[in-house]
Image (cartoon, rainbow, N blue to C red; front, side, top):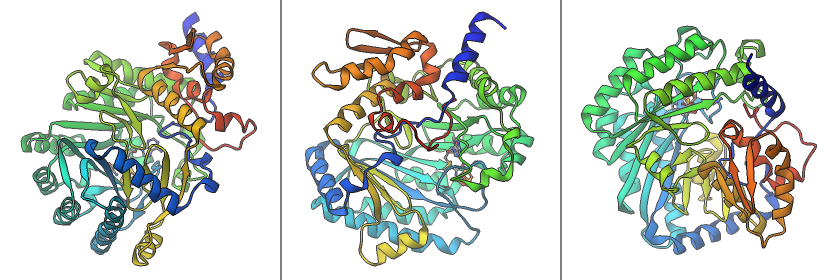
Length: 455
Ligand SMILES: C[S@@+](CC[C@H](N)C(=O)[O-])C[C@H]1O[C@@H](n2cnc3c(N)ncnc32)[C@H](O)[C@@H]1O
Ligand code: SF4
């Protein structure tokens, strides 16, 4: 083993601790319920809405249903083969949207819609049309709007693609994860290369201009050979973007992950080697490394945003667009008004009940204080730009530098004056670097395991 590899092995061993993915700050387990109430939340929404009216708001719609459970899955899902659930759920979504329209008090401008899940393509195409038309009836849309959806290749029909395209959708994200039959068997998720190829070709023919692949490293029974094969097959299809996620193993939250054992999982340096192999192959095909787990073709909007330092990170990962107001509707959706977060109830039954009673279905959230707002900006800059300019005026500066000193010695960051920069080595440890800024985590040094491991 080379010196460089052995020092990398040492770093992986040292930094492979439970760490948040920092899609928000404060991270969800640290939200302070005492700061939150539905009234405080709607005040925050109204405030941000009035401040940023001309920028347009983003809308996330959670569609939780899937026909079968992929055992590795960490998303909020409801497994059913009963498609009678579609219409009542759409009716509740439209009622929730009406509740937000009442908060805005005027017709909003919309810049983004993202359909996530679960599996949006579980829904019949005409039902998706009903939903989107119901939303659009009450809004104006920005000229540079971006509508996207997540699609399972095994159930995405040409009619889904055509109807969503006609409604203004131009981007889709295909869940691939891995093409290897043994890995697919282990995670109970099946789609062939040919199925993915057909969806890709149909989407391109219809006119979709940005297609993302979700791939994962660290899945049960994955090997360097299977990852190499998955990346080779993906490269043949040429997606515009690739999300190459680290498998999050959280069996205490997702019992489906107990269908395999810890012994089936590649861990530590073995897992990191899978990432490095995939990353090398993706970069060799001309994609650019955007951030923690995202790659994009150099003409794609995500790369352009990265270069122009306009990249943003939210609950869905990296984004080329930033709206100060993100409204999430549907089961378990999270909304973000910059100064506050709110999350909806997590079960379909509870969701319908709240909506029927005319109550906004938010169940928990957090209103950010001054310190949270500063740290939120720092963590976002580190995740999106790989650098942070500390404000010398705040009391946090000295403490953050002290907290970072070990990471400086390990070569993960550099400090020049008040400028903190992530090094090339540090890019594999971004989650650990952000932990040094995370005041809420630092105040709770002896903590139970709340997050998956960093590597
Ligand atoms: C809602 S799913 C995608 C849409 C569709 N349901 C599908 O499976 O094709 C969102 C993505 O989250 C990622 N994901 C889910 N569980 C994960 C886990 N435990 N660790 C890492 N990524 C995960 C997968 O890459 C998945 O494609
Ligand atoms: S990976 Fe997608 S299809 Fe599978 S259970 Fe999760 S959300 Fe459903």
